[in-house]
Image 1: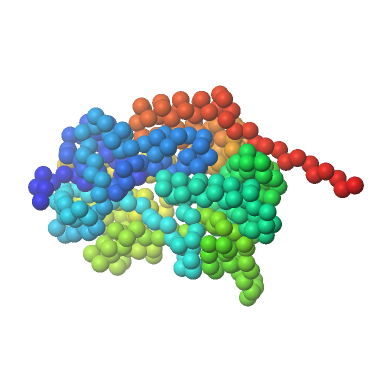
Image 2: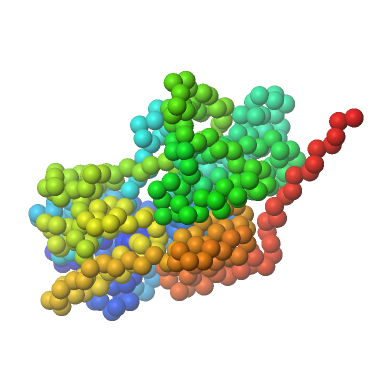
Length: 429
């Protein structure tokens, strides 16, 4: 057993990584162990740029080895399988174990499928580097096969792309595909007018109840003006997903309908991380929120275990819940770092204060919207530029920030993507 009693951070996403980096930036000299099963950090807001090829993999998903170089933070690529909160001990899949002085839980959530038959097996998620790579392979394969397919019904199935869930991820995905896929298909000699992008949502409006709700009209306008328009099926629940179709049921009907598609992209819902689920037996029931997340104090500490901090998608706030945004995770990471330093000095930790700077959305290639402090909205190409610049500024280290900015400026300089225009149909004689 490791007896050095380090600060252990479980999960190296936004909250976990920025907690570690903030500690080092504040010249905190404690032993820090950062644990994550993945080799690479995933800058999730820019996964679309990985899918489209606008930014390279090493920019969107840099290795932790690169990000932590020279930091003296110990990175352990492994999976935490159990945590004993009483004993302050955790066990890894490799059978290694650690006893910690302080613990930071930052494992986030996992993709949820709302109990939909076949969704987990047949739909494509979009939360990780592997998801983006698998989806790109699927999209290109469908387009390639369709470009050589004589059977019209089969070709239509290959060229229908369904996105389930009209939250921010679903909206950004649909708008991006509506520009990207026609571009790819035209390169193969296909008729881009055959492509369909269908966004399906259980609610009757897009972005409902989300911090981005004020951008509904901008998103709807973007859907109408993409290279191919995005089709909307609203007020319908998806009942099942297979490899060749999905079934959905309008909320005001008892009949199910079938959509023939070989690509269903699932962005609806999240589920409790299994590690957080395993902690429920160690936490009082009234110290869990309605979703089963452990409640934390305003200082982001567990109610009964003040040596444990938790934030992001794996913690429940006693006060107003916060949106799952990178800017929130970044600020929570800074708060946890400051509070860990305060505890080491015998001082009182401070409540977390998160200031939302606004929201950003990608609404197609070279198109976006930036809602700045809920006061100014910038749309179109300028909105896309603000979105990219804002996210690039948040990348974890100055060196990586410089590399990413260089790649992005190169992309802007050479205008790699031009939205192809639909040719008018030749009038029938």
